Length: 310
Ligand code: ADP
Image 1 (cartoon, rainbow, N blue to C red):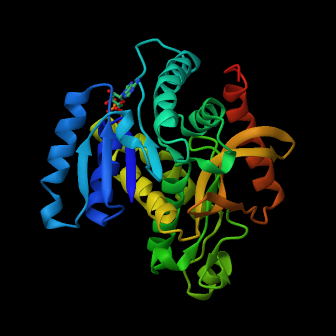
Image 2 (tube, rainbow, N blue to C red):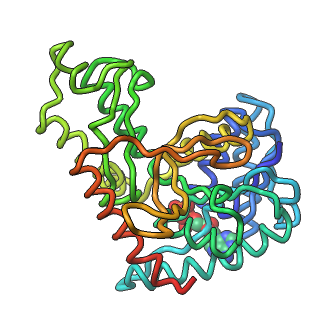
């Protein structure tokens, strides 16, 4: 199955590398405004595939995306000194007009997977520009925040993160919402589980985990300037769910008709992801504080998405 990646900087190339190592898809096509970069990334990744899975990876143009089941969009420009968030956003929307125009002309049936930050607002822009139904334009959203939360909870409780069902909802950013009230370890509510095994999850422990999840990107940026491996693997995970029609429940972003009275807002909820994109959206039971936090997160995102003129 063919997968496209447009934008082959650190994030796009890491996604391609993760897919090649994980054996996601059979053919990966890399497209970038800088074709020499796309070619170099394809060659470099291809040289790793003899040690991993049989995936053909090559550089190409938009025409080569014909028939792609999923196209990951990781193209974007970075912030200039003194540039406002909104001005940067508008420049990235201009990039998306060109990129998505090219993708849709070649692969009108594809599913778009958006990675460019701010990912929720860019998912909104991609949906509006492409005209695709909301369920076929997915943002990586809080996939990584959720993974970080589960990993920290696994450490705290001394159990495998795969036995923890907990989600970070809302914005992939400062207003994100870790949901404690419906989090489970095995089939036991997580706070009760923590008490039973003598590793309580009191307010301070929960706050510490939430702060670490929210601050993880900042810590990494301090050390290496940007983040790419974690999100690369997260993108490969989402693509695997789509092309394998896994119907996995993942926290990813999509334009929602209504969140707490705010319409057409892109943010993350747990969603069933399969061959048609998002098959269903789930709203966990939230307590009053979580509901208010989700509304606030929706307001933050909507503050930007509503200014883009779509
Ligand atoms: P990140 O760390 O988010 O991956 P990078 O700057 O490393 O950021 O990568 C962004 C990539 O997007 C660059 O390789 C750049 O050439 C590419 N890009 C920017 N504008 C366009 C465009 N209009 N079409 C295709 N690719 C683009």
